[in-house]
Image 1: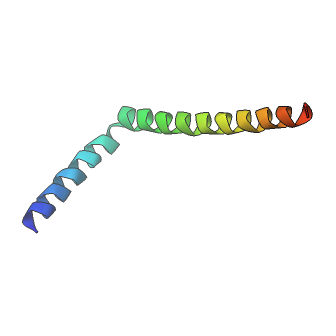
Image 2: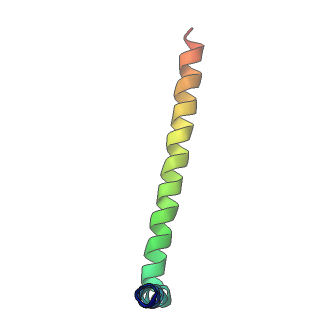
Length: 57
């Protein structure tokens, strides 16, 4: 149990340092936002492609 506690303490400290670093936090936030936006664009492109396929039939 001591090893798990030590690892958890190390992990917690690492994340605390990351979250206190605003540039790191903003980079992670931008990456997440970009991934979400790309997923939405891809889904919309699929819908538009399917709608175009249905018009030609």
